[in-house]
Length: 339
Image (cartoon, rainbow, N blue to C red; front, top):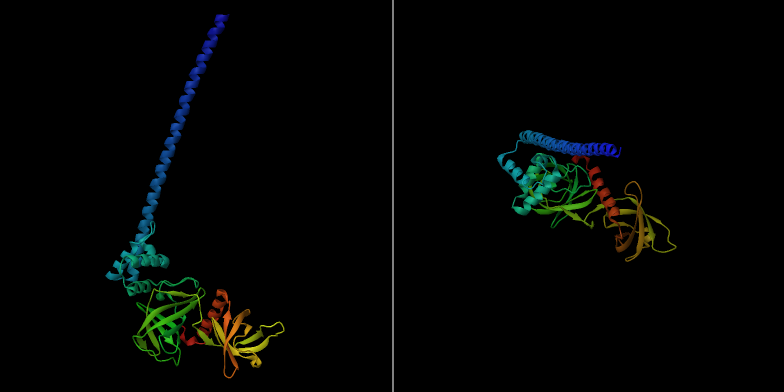
C-alpha cells in the first residue's frame, strides 16, 4: 500500500515537474514573440517616418522651386538666399526662409555677424519676396517691412521737421509723400525717420536718394531703434482740456490745447492763474476715454496766456496712447496720401 502510494506520488511529481518545464518554455517563447513584434513595429515606425520625411522634403523642394520661379530671382539673389539658408536652425527648410519673415530676419542677423553683406541687398530680397509686418505690435526688422499708408516724421540735422506718408516700397528705397508746404530737403541729405505702431515709437537713420515731385526716395535700413522717451514729436491740437491746480481747494478750469506731444503740451492758461513751476493736473480725451496726467509748468508764452507743461510720471501706456492718436490724426488729415 505504502509502496503503491509512493509510486503514484512519484508519477504525480514527475508530471508536475514536466508541466512546469513546459510552461516555462512557453513563457520564454511568448516573451520572445512579443520582443520580435515590438522590434518589427519600431522598424516600421522608423521606416514610415523616413518615408514621410522624404515626402515632406520633396514637397518642400517642389514648393521652393515653384516659389523661386514665381519670384524670378536672379543669380545674385539666389546665391544670397542660399547663404541665408546656411544659418537655418535644425529642422528648418530653405523654403521657410521665403515664407516666414521671422526666420528670414533671424538668418539675416546671423549672416551679418559672420560676413559683410550690404543692407540694401537684404532689403531688396525682402522686398522682392514681399515680407510685411503681420501684426501691428511687431517691431520691423527693416524699414522695407513698413506698410504703405504709414505716417512718418522726417527730422533733418537742421531745419523744420517734415511729416509724410509712405506711398511705395521698392528694392533698396521707400517712397514718402511729403506734407504740402514742407521745408526744402536736398538730395543726399541724411536724416532720422520716425514712425509709430501700437508697440511704440521707432526711428532709423536714412538718406534722401532722389526726388519725385513732392515726394522723396529714402534708403532702407535694418537698424531700427526703439524710443523710450517720446518728446521729439508735437502736433498742433485744439482739444478741450480741463486744468486743475495742485491745491486742495482747486476746481477744474476749462481750457484748450494748443499743441500736444508724448512728453508735454502747450495750453491756454485759464485766467492766467498758473505760473512757472506750478504743478497741475490736465484731463483731455484724445480718443475714446479720458486721459488724466500730472504736469508741471515749464514756461509761459504770449504774455502768460499760454503755458508750456511737461507731463510728470506719465506711464508708457499713456504715452503710447497719445502718440498713437497724434500719428493717427496725421493720417486722417492726409487722406490723399493713402493708396
